[in-house]
Picture 1 (cartoon, one colour):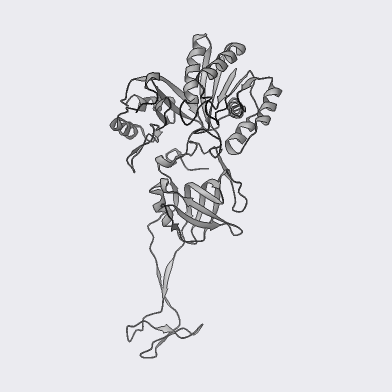
Picture 2 (picture 1 turned 90 degrees about the vertical axis):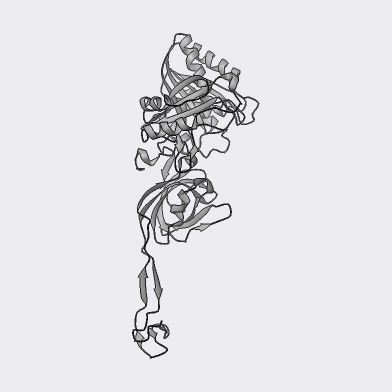
Length: 406
């Protein structure tokens, strides 16, 4: 059977993956075989998400009725029902659901009615609490097919430590990243000297290590020193895969979806209040604003070097008329130049314009020249892909250490 669960956490506490890790152990206690624990990230722009918009799925061998009963009981035990945006859903099905629902949940928006219709057709067991919105994520999780997959080990705290300051050795985190990158990533941000993998919210997670396989995330995890830990769980996931991105063109972008958009830079980047950097680009027909917000830190240095005429592919979410950049490909660079009146060979002084289309004339000796002086501006920027730092990276965004976007 496949078990899907979503929407049990809140900004104030709990974590759906923690509930899932507890569920794994209860199912095993009931002599069920858990073949896989899967963590799927859905559309990161969903406005009603509690935190990272993740749902979980388990591939289990055992009694579906008993598994459904255990799962529902655990949700009622651990979910944060006090939060308005926490609306859990549980699904148990003995057949695979249409993966198109999962694809839509990652790249677009699904409704509860769509999820229920799919579940009823499949004869699945399901239950939703409050407004039942969690059924969307739970259904997407059991419908998931991962063409590209990564791993994450999530290490949870002892329940007695929930809500208190975390104690994880900063030095060991940097050492683990240095030893295992690029097979693991986003443990720390070396450029900005920041720890990334330790959350700041009052939830059960102590830290999480993302990487290309269970072997690599475990290798990094074993190097990390911390407070006494509780349970730990390795997840198969779609994190770091760019699964949320759609091909797009300027003028035909839908709000709250994420795209790869080719175009030509049409304005010099401007740094606005708060340190946010923006520029305009178009594909010949329509224009769109691209934004590199302050949290993207050193990525903004790249954006500030763009000039009109540069050909780029902007990657990110479209919100309120802007593409919020996650990464950018510089396809080709324009060759900007300064244009000045030429020097008079005799007087070594700048000539002046002699009128439109009449060339240039020296005021001292009346010498003439037909063409201005053109000096190409050298640029240190190179074509290629550039990405935001780990501190600003979204769960689904594919880091360049895994390869370039397709």
